[in-house]
Image (cartoon, rainbow, N blue to C red; front, side):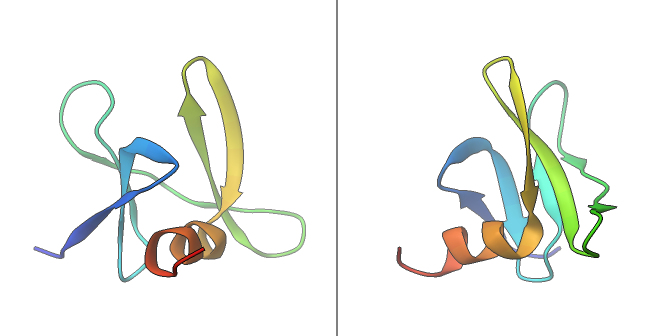
Length: 68
């Protein structure tokens, strides 16, 4: 199994080194399916309380693995 890292801005979501996003919301651990945005970037929608926002996966990786 690959190692997962918590996304600092979203405590219920985890990221792998391969760019896979996992959600712990609801029952169990669920791998999220990315979509392509209009510019060709992979995005996922993450919720914070009752709001959903789309994030580019490379930005989530930067937030998680680099010191901002």
